[in-house]
Image 1 (cartoon, rainbow, N blue to C red):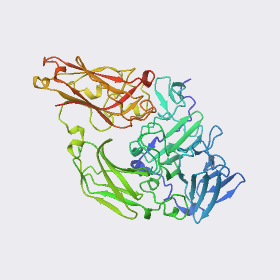
Image 2 (image 1 turned 45 degrees about the horizontal axis):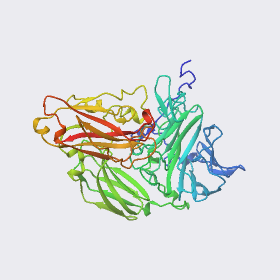
Image 3 (image 1 turned 90 degrees about the vertical axis):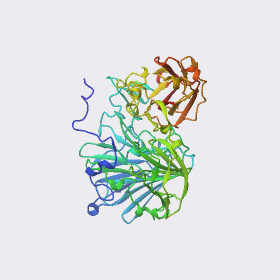
Image 4 (image 1 turned 90 degrees about the horizontal axis):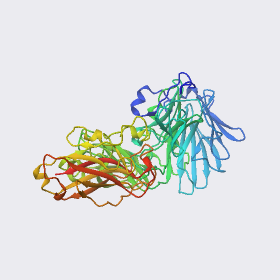
Length: 558
């Protein structure tokens, strides 16, 4: 029997969404017509508070623990699988759950120790608005998961493992019969890349529209699991804090709203996207930690000079309490970041994903902090240095290297991956595309780069640089040039969890520098010098879980 024999006929899926998809969006959320809200209200069935949105959605919340126990859209139940409900983390214990109607809004409040969680419904909308306030680490609340019944939205996307029965790694990476790999980790997207996640059958869409992630950690380029689909059912996630491949400490406070949205098959309304969503209707609901728009400020920069216009630039704000970011305009570097909580932030300008400028900015409630043009010093961008040769671009990611695109949604063992071995010749024209994006001690350590030098170049010492974006098990590069061998560098600070095998190269960018003496070079200008790059580390296990690292760029300076 073929793998597709048991799939429902006519089902299709929306993987991830951005504002670009809004043009085809079916109205859902603040734009929905209230005329259909005749049944709006709530009731108590003894075990749950039952909310009728007055549109096509009825949902239930447990009075015992705050679980979302039912999501009925147009008469069909979508919630739950394996006897599990939708909830924070793996569910809360006995909680205090209350309900209140304020005009056209119903708010259900859940209190469990120091954790506060909220569900809100608006009259005439097929949406559930959620907020989560984690005050400290006494409660393990790192995600909200919407559990969806099996068979509702089956698909064969990278984050679906319904048809991938063979385990490749741990208990969460799988392989299909054709050698393609699947895992809930393989989302393809950075936080900055999506506004919503979910599925569509063509006539019904179910999505989670993400929040602004101001209390999350990891910044705009963080990668995490976003959804999954298996024979048991599906899950859509709002990640509040996820410890895997994490580069920042956990932030605490109110996160939200994020939205569970049903549509007639189209994308969620762009009015629900975090950049567009206004929630003045929630200002007086008494949500713990809620800060209205009037209590927030804005940062605006008139421009950024010293940019390499071949790359996108992002401006980030971060302090221990919150994080924000915005894209710089390609023409002049103008940027604006609204909705910022008052405080002093580190402002970082990223070329691609590489930090090339850092400063400080203070935000006040109700005000706009206007910044004069930011000048990026030439020395801050390693791509500006004069090089004899260079592999890759200094942009904070392994983009352009062999297998780089595939690795955001597949395991390194995937049948679609090109060979991880193979040497590189400078001047071939394929230096970057032939060089593997990742190096492992047990897979391709000792890869060789061949290059020639002129007599003048061979007569002088040079600096060789290797930029990395993350590392696993303290993997870091040690080099040899012909008969000369470098010392083993100390490992920089990197996340301690899996990364390279679960779709993420995002760690802490770091540049290793090696001072190669003139005596290392060959004096024959017609001969190729041999650079060997090894992965040094006594940690890790074997194969793709041996010590490894992700490459940003490699160059030999003039």
